[in-house]
Image (cartoon, rainbow, N blue to C red):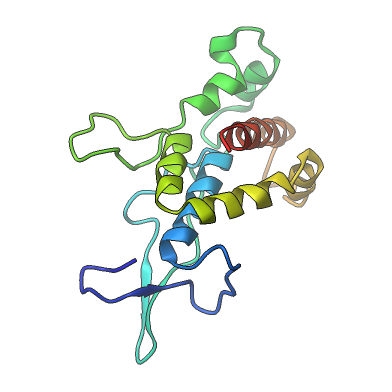
Length: 180
């Protein structure tokens, strides 16, 4: 991966890459998979970047700013309704299917790609990296997601928000792995 100056972009500074991830583009595939997993709709041009380390080079940054994820803008009432509804159009499944990235398929595309589509497009560019990230996702289960969410203090997340986030990750993990 190169930047406008033509300099090569290295992997994130100090990060030990798995063998399947050989460049910054392979790391970005992982970031886009994470975005699809948590329905992050905020991976715009200011939410990824590079760091110039004098005398060492240009490094891709670690991932950051996932605040527009896991239904954070929804009320607990809406989360609960979506979790309990039998109306397919109001379900959590329908909710995650609508999640959009900030990436467009072409310069003239009228709408941005959905988060899952953005991952698939990146996977075409770095299929070995995509397979690596998907194999890592395949090692994770609902109990792992539940344990992560349990670490969030109750003062920071309500039970409906925790349940909604868990359901979103379950659905999105399944969607990502089905397309493998």
